Picture 1 (cartoon, rainbow, N blue to C red):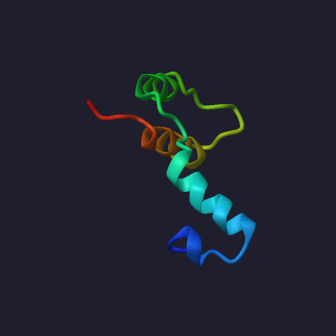
Picture 2: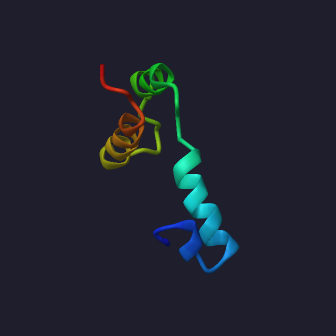
Picture 3: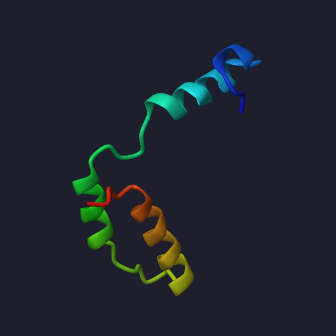
Length: 64
């Protein structure tokens, strides 16, 4: 990606830069913790997949 919007060469690059600044995956830390705590291993998930999904959910949690 480009460093600043002025350095971008295409509309997709500009959109990507703006999305990184203004869009957040999950602004509500309580909701993120609830999703992590209630995440259950699906029948098709192996241990590695479940662990990876849990780690991804944990990234959105706000530490208190």
